[in-house]
Image (cartoon, rainbow, N blue to C red; front, side, top):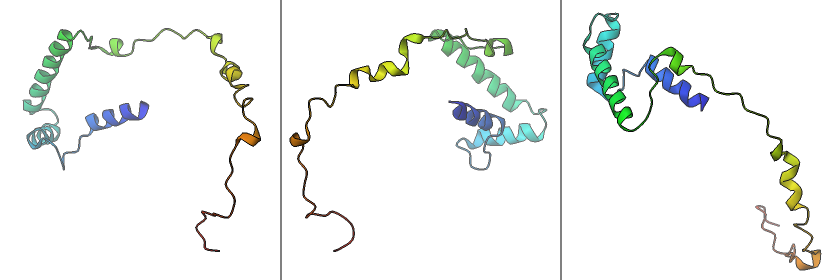
Length: 119
């Protein structure tokens, strides 16, 4: 998950403007970047799109964080759960092979070697 988020952040910070999926957006972004933010066309379109996604999210019941504090909300610490100790996973497996004897197994003879080299 961390790698995916880092990739998204990387794309947002420095999008690929040399082979874009949306050429118009690429041209506007480069113009905005080269003007050091003085060209407002790109910025206004992005702000309009972000605002419309807030409305879509609200309609779908999704709360979108809008401030740094909302993004960085700390979760509750996890309580230690001793009910799932690793030893418990193997308790049911102890008698798995008790029903099998070596006599029940069928082994093929070595006459039919399936190796890669010829004999």
